[in-house]
Image 1: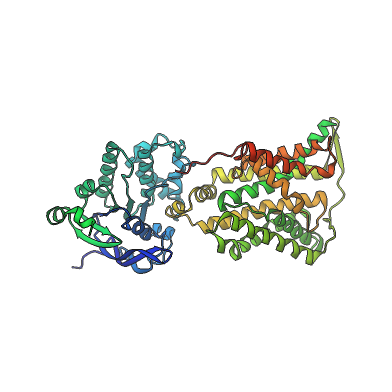
Image 2: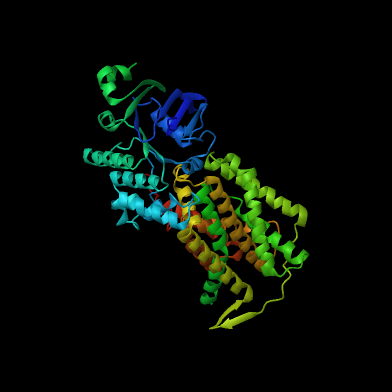
Length: 240
Length: 287
């Protein structure tokens, strides 16, 4: 019996800006249903890796697959249609549009029928009831944590198989961080694979199936949280 | 007499509203001030001229055809020029639009010469009500401008296309990861611009006759209208256009009509000094 295709497969990914590679030769397979977290010091290439997977930065080398669909060469909108949902670290909502409009645009351009879009909206509002009461409110008036939740809701509107999160708890209070982490695990329980970039190592190790440590654009460690805690000293890995 | 001047100014403002809307829409989505808006309006007038005079189509049909032809021309211009400079600075795109303006104007000059042309329409009569005189051209200007403004309002506020334009205007990268193709939205924005400028070209050509400098003579007023209203604000563009129109006409009571265009420059300077975002422009939330 053959094992299912990885939810996300990165094969020798190198990428960067203006000819200089920030990410070098990253190879990893993420199984369906995993919560897979990338941690690393500032400037290690974590967000660059997220943008490469999202299709916002081209690869200098390597291939990306989501399930059995090859993402390499696809534009960012095409990757959304292929099953990728992305929550950027910042500027992740349209502040001059209402909450309702933010949710609407996240599904209107994916070639779905009106009925399918309405069903998807209901499903997402059930996951994110905070949004339902304030659909006419301008999104720019939300607090940081509320914007993050709205950004999650928008990414979920497309019904992604894989949700890519770039530092979802960045700049949030401990209470809001706990709420966000709780929402991530709830989304994961519905079958969505999570590929997360995080600075908050404690939370990352607590909820993840596996963690990958990226230092200077290269993979230093790939292990389960238990293995990581047993074998590695985080400071030594970060400084390696 | 003041009432007549105000009415004339109101109609002038309505004629400015469509190109001001086009300018503000392209600024909002493409993030640069399109200096070629006047030349594009001129091209629209010439398209209608060819359809009306050379091919003997009724003016209303010629206007629709001109709008469609200009929309296609602007999409092609974007593909050939602006798309290749897409992520350059606003100044680079502005300079490119200046080049486009000269090219369009001189193509028109090469084909049609420098002389003024007129549409082939029956002479339209005037009307008088409540001591106010107005003519049929002014009536068509008012109807067309109102129809254009309502259409743009509905498009931006109540359609998928309008939402996609707002999304791309706010954050093109985020729009992309929400499944919105920036290039597709930009093409549609140019198409809307083409319709607005094609209609404006016909209205202005009806009033003044058509020559290669037609749009150039409106350029300062169009920019003044858009800046006064707030670059990027469609409602502001309309209000700005009405204000400019009325102020320009009222200015002829105290200064020579030859200097009425100067009021546009004065308003631009005044607004940029006191309220750079314009009457209805907002300091947009970036985060």
